[in-house]
Image (cartoon, rainbow, N blue to C red):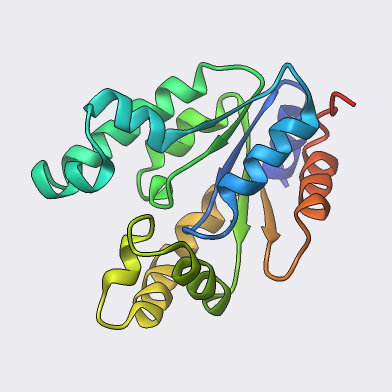
Length: 189
């Protein structure tokens, strides 16, 4: 019950939205549409872009040259940077929930919205996007890899989320409206 009360009071002070979830759940497309709908005083940002700018290399290069620990350190810095911004819609990397400090930073000024989709839907979207943008499909059995990672991350996603929205087979505008309604952030139109 205390958690409910805490969440309710935080709705009054938070002016940003952090979208979390597995790859291909719609964080980028929904995030951009959401920022547009909220109006000119809202910007769309991606934690991955902060990481790329700070590291001065691509995410696959960070993983191959520096390793996952180095990537996760960049990710913490990106979440800290994002937490200091106002009126932003933040698309977070899929693994951001693996370190609680990231969520603690994001929760300072953001409603945490988990976007979910079925493993089948994620697989279809990832295959459509291609190997260059979705490295998980470069596995021997990409569908099995997606299912395995989803099962592992599910408790992390759910523990971090204030709002959970399934994007499977849903219209982008309908999802955006639901996020605005549930976060009680006023749109700019």
